[in-house]
Length: 269
Image (cartoon, rainbow, N blue to C red; front, side, top):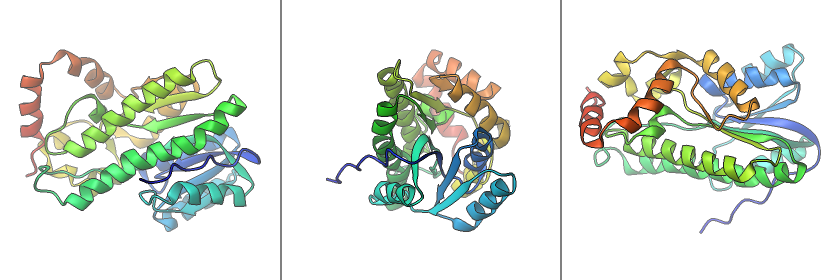
């Protein structure tokens, strides 16, 4: 069994840690969060796009640090804690945005790649929260913004592991919101619908009829509304009309009707 990560540094300058910050929603959340004037710590596997983003933020007078890291590695939380300590920082806000998806039938997709979704979307997000939350609760401030999806509101045939990972993240967020209530620490889950980002192409989602037909929100708009909802203490943040409709309509629809429809419209073409 993997040893739980130790708590991150409690002393130093406050920082906002954004994972998956190399593109898409993560990069836009970093831009929005930078307005708060705290140090920004950008974390992802790919360094060059984060270095470009950090240079952009620094040009605007916003301190930014780049930590290239494979968050799917069991040693990543400790490595990130060490990177914070080396820079004299503590995590004031954690934005758990890193994640990926795969399109295709569960039994037909590569098993290692699907387990990688579990490692990054579930295990890494949980491990980082375990490392960050004790210090936040001790200080009585800060928070965790988990980036989920409307996929977390229903099972997803032909994207089974990804949908399940987002359901887990939504459930975890709501439970932590209840545990932290009244402590001064905010916990939120941002649940957008499809967003115009490189994420869709990397996952091969463009091959599914469902995602070709659905409207796509702008990443900047999702980030703006997500950060605003987080700072207002919202438990679940639905940043666009499609996410709002999905969250309210899905619980009313019988699974026997819904699942065959999702399977059909989400079948790779």
